[in-house]
Amino acid sequence: MNKPVSKVREAKLELYRKKGKIHAREVRGRFNTIRWAMVWFTQIIFYGACWLQWGGRQAVHFDIVHEKFYLFGLVLWPQDALLAAIALILAATGLFLVTALAGRLFCGFACPQTVYTAIFMWVEAKVEGDHLSRLKLDQSPPSLRKLALRGTKYVLWGLIAAWTAITFVGYFTPIRELLPAVAGWNLGPWEAFWLIFYALFTYVQAGFAREAVCQHMCPYSRFQGVMFDNTTRTVSYDVQRGEPRKGKGGGDCIDCGICVQVCPTGIDIRDGLQYQCINCGLCVDACDEVMTKVAKPVSLIRFASEQELAGMPRHSARPRLAVYAGLLGLFVALGAWTVTQRSLLLVDVLRDRGSLAREASDGRIENAYTLKLANLAEEPRDFEVAVSGLPGIELLGPTRFAGEPGSIREVRVTVVAPPDAGKSGASPIAFVVKAAGDPATRVTEKSTFVLP
Ligand code: SF4
Ligand code: SF4
Image (cartoon, rainbow, N blue to C red; front, side, top):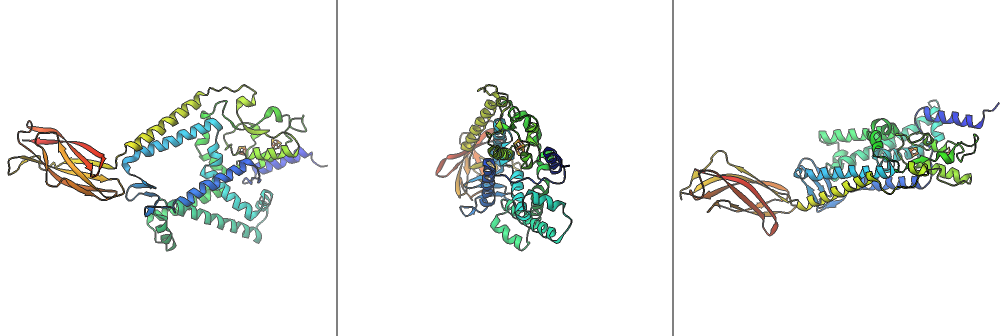
């Protein structure tokens, strides 16, 4: 006797979910389109930005050897670590805000793990066929055909992983220098290490680990719940409308299981909110298609908040959102202020400890100093140095020094003052360094002058 249809479906579902790796069924729809648009958007930026040139150099370049980060016309130095910290805090606050608004949107649409898994799965589907063909291939005994299909897939994955690693390292070693070095395997130890590591990392993460990374390795899936409230819109199954499922009562869900089959993490959204759900919306696309076919309204699965699903009126006040939005505004303002206050000249003054003070032939007292002048601009500039703080104090010798672009120059200077300029011992003085022809670039650095 034939098994009831629902039993067969359940058996298929269990087989599908528990045995081996997940072979998600392909689905069309608006969220799938958005997902692929994000894949194109992020990857055009990632693979393309390292090829852009700016002023004769790579536009985006983390120059670790010279401790600089080039971002088009902006050159950041280790002294700009505060800006990097603000950028990271901004990204985290933005992520919290988006999560509070609509759950794990980042995971479903922009996370590199999701993006590369989508690319690797696309290759897999092109080589091995749809989800059923892939399931069959998994279960089939070894054969020449299986070997050829698997071999082709692994080679294509390897090429993508290799190009991804070259691109990644190309942000640290200019890619136009890196490529010939890779071709001749003429690489430094760190470049070779990161190329191999990143290629293997991409290959394993996107080819094999896939949803396991989201479920077991990613810390974000564990704590994202704290950003949720009952107005956060996440992918949800409308239990009231769907249950009891068709065949058991008369809800809209026909228990076809397609929402499970398309899920890249292999979960059943009808079981409620689960930490494994990356909010990709593919089950929404799948169910909408099913509902259209059975002539029922779409959105049985949809982005909805607990409040909406319970039929409660929407509250406009959302303190959590206000806090995240406020923090975001604050850090944007702080970042903008830090950029405007950023000086392209850094000055460090070191007193010459070897000779505290000595008397010159004209009777005045001399103190020696070393000035470190960091020209953070990308063009050569001259710096004028002056000193103040005691009557009659002045620099002996040259007061103007040339600074090469993006370089630090050390200059030794001698300061003289009359012996009666102040009381015996150390008196506070100040060095004032100005960029010639640019009054806005001016740094005052304190020091001391010793009188016998
Ligand atoms: S796709 Fe829709 S109808 Fe089919 S099982 Fe899922 S929720 Fe039910
Ligand atoms: S349950 Fe739906 S939204 Fe969540 S991961 Fe699976 S397919 Fe994506």
